[in-house]
Length: 234
Image 1 (tube, rainbow, N blue to C red):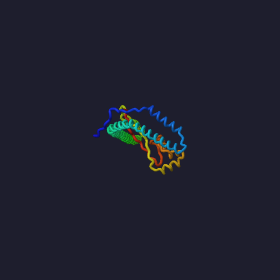
Image 2 (spheres, rainbow, N blue to C red):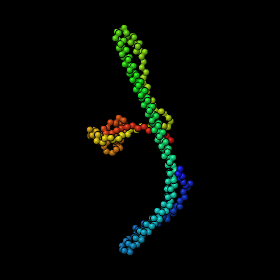
Image 3 (cartoon, rainbow, N blue to C red):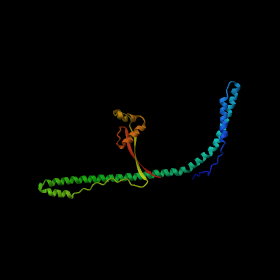
Image 4 (cartoon, rainbow, N blue to C red):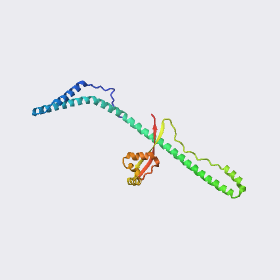
């Protein structure tokens, strides 16, 4: 395991800001007042330029002497936490995936149960209709028997789709995403619907349009899908 050395404290030597400001102000004032009019003054200007560069270099070294320990300390702290944070991020992603998988499967099971119950109910209703027709064929004398038969045949309503498991601090968020699978088809679609021409400009407009319509979006050349993520409060 890598050992990260994080300093308990960082000590910096604070330079005299007033002295630095005075030196820089003096150099700038001198430059503004200086005029290059001949070879001699040109030479003096070259000397002053060298002096200015030297002063700037000295200040930069002083700055780095202060910032480097801070940068090194920050880098050590970031390195110290990077591994555990990455592992926790992987753990969060994995558990969210399992939770979404569970709720998705429960909704699928409930929906299948609803479809099956509806199928059974439909078959029972058809059976009732056939038996009622057979009784009706016996004439009016069978009317009481028909009513009694129908009253005894009660079809149970289909179960509702199970709601998402409710846990305090946990919620599911659905988002609608899209992929342009056939740009030419999309262009043809927009050509047939000129009011959608803005969708061919910035991607943000197409994204907003898709999100606005959700899974009801029907654009040629664009695949729309819904994704679910789990959010947890800290």
